[in-house]
Length: 298
Ligand code: NDP
Image (cartoon, rainbow, N blue to C red; front, side, top):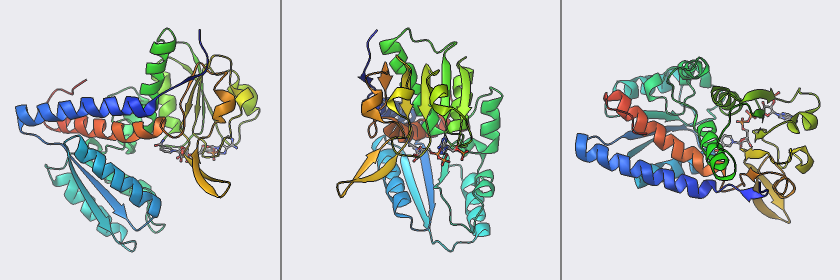
């Protein structure tokens, strides 16, 4: 089989958003329902502001309602919890996302725990994490969900479409990427290994991976010769670096070195990144359907 294929996450995400827009239109015409996503941002972190603006625009572009609530950085935790309680009780709100990171005086665990699990479109609530872990219907975190979609599509295009029995190595064990990614691949019957900063012999471990997922947060950390011949590589990393005085985004994988060895690999940018927002919208659409007792469009 071939090597050196680049996975077009940008194009896949565009197609997914178009399918979501179609379902939103049907939901509107047949049930008079417009899914609504509320994003809460506390403080003025510049990166968070850009993410929130993007989320708002993309939400509207698929025909959903988008509301953004901006709170000052000195908002107290009880005041934020009160707001979440109101959003939970508001039946016109289908999805609630609290942009992380929160200011240091708040516990993100406590804040996320206050969100109604059915409206927790980020999938970070312990109930959703637990449901995913035991194989029940759950709202799945957007980045791993989008990564799995790209992986399955690449396997269909370049291989036999089957994840069953493949060795998957995930580098990174965060609650928002590494751990849920491991759960998803386990559910797909991969043999899953999770690596982290205390893992020994990481290069050798990576060389056993038919599926290699990098969620480390270090620019070009995964070297080309860590990639098994014919592997599928999913690069979740988004790292801003300076190259000759210019700011540039790179992944956790040394893309140029990994590409010729991999069957297929996601680029950065235009790989996993655009899938995250598309999956957020998909989660919001599904949440709206569940909340109204309607079949979840598939
Ligand atoms: P975290 O910082 O929460 O987790 C990083 C993980 O990498 C940790 O488990 C850490 O191990 C591990 N790690 C760090 N250094 C090493 C090392 N030298 N060797 C092996 N493992 C190591 O990051 P996130 O999971 O939140 O994000 C990971 C990356 O993905 C970041 O670049 C982030 O920007 C990006 N990201 C992209 C998204 C998207 O939309 N595409 C969404 C979310 C994140 P330990 O636990 O031992 O500390």
